[in-house]
Length: 109
Image (cartoon, rainbow, N blue to C red; front, side, top):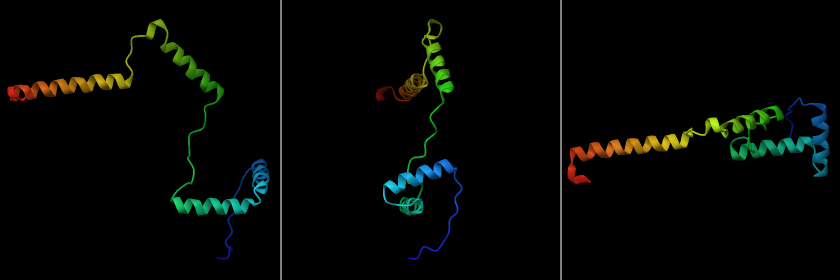
């Protein structure tokens, strides 16, 4: 099929230069790489790679570490995680359910 449709993409000059250098090392052009991306996107029915949240910057990492440290201090050792609370709730619901079943039919348990 003839390639006669144009696609205009705006990118930062630095990114364009780095991409041209990278793709030329593979023996292809940026245009070839974009075509490969588009074909692959059509084949998989979406973006052909994982789209992830960006890594946190140093300030955010420091804040996370500080918060984690505060949880391990003596003042905050007595807390439940969500999963442990969820497990306790599940057990409580199970006990209530089995107790009410037992009342309905004492021979069941």
